[in-house]
Image (tube, rainbow, N blue to C red; front, side, top):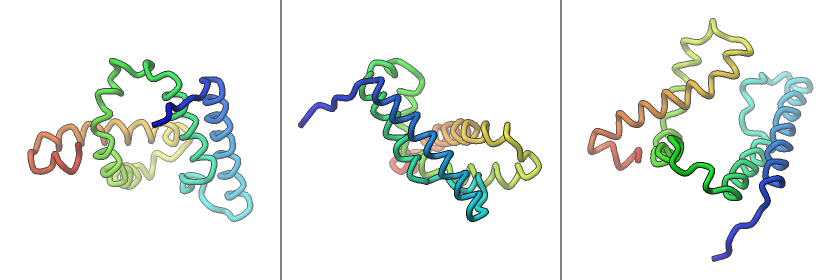
Length: 132
């Protein structure tokens, strides 16, 4: 098995370039085709953005040691499974909260609520195998 090697500077560059491409693609889709800006989560730039973040973490694996994020890692599958339901609930009740601040805070709220919900649901023995 080969060891991954990437400098932190290169990984950060890929992440920032991916983020820029992500937002450029969304603005172009909105401008050219009138698609809603909040409805375009997965464009090509998203993959580069995510890959850059993963490469940065692989370049510095000690960065997450002994943090709450390391402890929450075991709930990744459960968060992935349940986050869409949480997002739908937030969007249903958040119709009047539309705006830039809500758009920025929504992913954080969805993550926190999903994490807390999965932690609670994982205490039920028959659900644990699906969530943890």
